[in-house]
Length: 218
Image 1: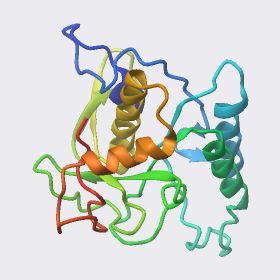
Image 2: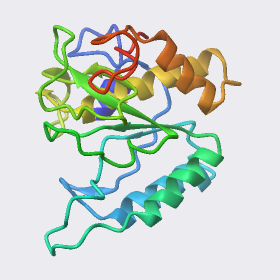
Image 3: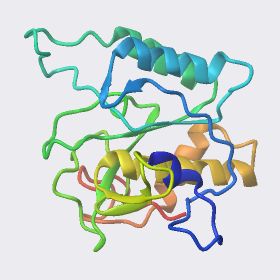
Image 4: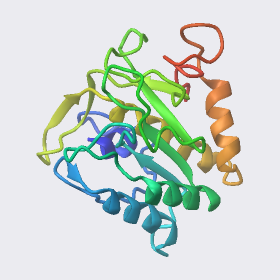
């Protein structure tokens, strides 16, 4: 579903089109269904930077963990390994994009909450914030994330409608890929700044916790 939002072929008379058709996609599998371990996510981040056949320019992370929310064993998660992996990718110039979370509140989700990551919230078709979309300091921009249409995650021939900030983030990652196609010399910091300064302002004038700097404007 996420891959389709980024790269689904255009102008073929089928289903839907991605934001950046034709961009090279490296699917780093860190989940078994809806379950993952922090170690698997961390391993995927390092692989995106270090593996010679990957060397990703942009990393989309449609996932998140709340470091202040106790786990099933009652303990708070230790995300030190994630801190280091994200810092490593940033130091290597990777553009980092992540979903901000779908828990109808203000709790910070990581990796979106890291300063070097572009945090993406979700809006409805009418451009207003989706009720589930987290609103806090991690929101840099928003993108469509309610009832969006893409390739099926369970069939090779069907399509699905889905909702979540996990479906808004890949649209921003795809926009970053398009910008890098035009200007490969763009740094991750400059690209993040472009995203913010070209976004269509929403909510209160200027940045706010619901919409960040505004709606992605590809």
